[in-house]
Structure formats: structure tokens, C-alpha cells
Amino acid sequence: MDIATDTTQTVFVEFQGSRRGSYSYTPSEGKEPIERGDQVVVETDEGGEDSGIVTHECPHCENGVDPDTKVIRKLSPADYAHLIDNQEKEDEAWDVCQERIDELGLDMKLTDIEFQFDRKKVTFYYTADERVDFRQLVRDLAAIYRTRIEMRQIGVRDEAKRHDGMGVCGHRICCSSFMDDFEPVNTQLAKEQGLPLNPSKLTGLCGKLKCCLRYEYSYYEEKMGDFPDVGEVFDLPEGRARVNHLDIFNDIVHFWLVDRAEILEKPLSELDDHSKTQSEA
Image (tube, rainbow, N blue to C red):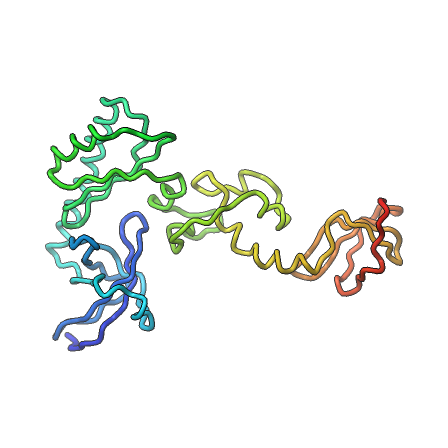
């Protein structure tokens, strides 16, 4: 049943390659509101058209949406046919572009191709260790497709984001599901969280350190201020002890009793600065 409404919706749309954006939509008379999972056509910044899937609605986000970013319509049967044709053209363009890359001897790896819905632009994504002179390649592709050609160099993290996948946690990888920007991640984050420095455990599908190493780091950083340092020596009633491990979630300090060669667990609340010693065990 058609619904007549003039209520403007704010919806988030996900496009090919895990691109995302927020758009406004005002249903015309007799048209139904947009729902999660609907495939829609939106207006691009350059005035063209692109298509994507509505991931969710945000009724309280109207003020944060550019009024020029609008959903034009839901996909019609003709739009679906056009979208499938675009996908087939992308497969064909891959072979064409890769052949020209090989002929020109360009040191680059083609990773993805995306036809804008209205075919006013075709974007070729690639990775490369150094700068690539692809001017001749662009001229050749423009002569074939008679539209705007964009060559976009991306990193390995962006490549993983575009291709999507499942992490070892069993969930869709973070960069594809919700991340818009990449923050720096280094091994120091793993060290300070007491994680073993095992590359196979710490690296994601992109081959780089997992972005999720940052998620709990602020909590660790805050809690670690209440704990002694690993290796610090205390004079406890049980004897001289060296801090061996910290359990910040249960506020437990694990000690190594030097003279007795035993492990001792002690609540953080039972420690005080008076029991510290400057001497080495």
C-alpha cells in the first residue's frame, strides 16, 4: 500500500568498495519511505548518479547532511538491468586495462574497477610501490570508453576494504563494515596490552597490523596508570617479589616470588608504594 508523506529521511548508503555516505530523501506523494536494504540511486557531488544499498536510517542526523546529497529514487527494474550491465562491463574493462598495463610495461597492480551508475565516470583502482606515469593508459581507456577515466592509487588497507572479507573474529572486517578512516597502528599498542608479538595473530587480511588493536588501547592506557610496571620489585609479606604479569580486567597483579620460585597473585588494592624496593632481585 502506498504511503503519502512529506517527511524527509536521512539515510546512510553503502556503495561498491565499502564507500559510504549520508543522504536525504523526501518521498513524493504516493511513494513509500526508504527502508534498510533498499537499493537506491543517489546524486553525486558532480551532479551524476550512483547506486548503493541503504544500511540504516538516522532520524536525528538531519543537521549533519549536505542538502545537495539526495536520494533520487529506489532502483526500478530498468535500473537493476542497468546495474547488472555495469557489472559485466567492469569485468570486461579489467581484461582491457590489464592488457594495456602489460603492453605499456607499467609497474602497477590493478585491484578494482568501478563504473559509476550513469557511466559518466570509470574509476580504476591500483597499488604501486612508486609513482606511475599512466597518462598514455588513461588516453587509451578514454578512447575506448568515451567517458571520464580516473586512476586512483590506494594502499593495501584500502584494497582489503574494497574487496571485503571476514576477520578471524568471525565478523566482517572493520574497515569494510564501519570504518571511514585508518588510524596509525604499531607494535607498541600490542606490547602495552600484553599481547604476544606473533605476526600471524596480529595482522589482518591486508597484511598490516589489525586496526582493532586500537579499540581497547585507551582503556589499557588509563588502567595501567594504577598498576606497577612489569619487572618492578616489591617486598611483600610472602617475600621479595617481581611483577610478572598484570590482569587489568580483574585488578590482579601476578608476582614471581624470587626466593621461593613461585607465582603469587595479589589484588591491586593490597599493594602500596611502601612495599616497593629500589634494589634488584
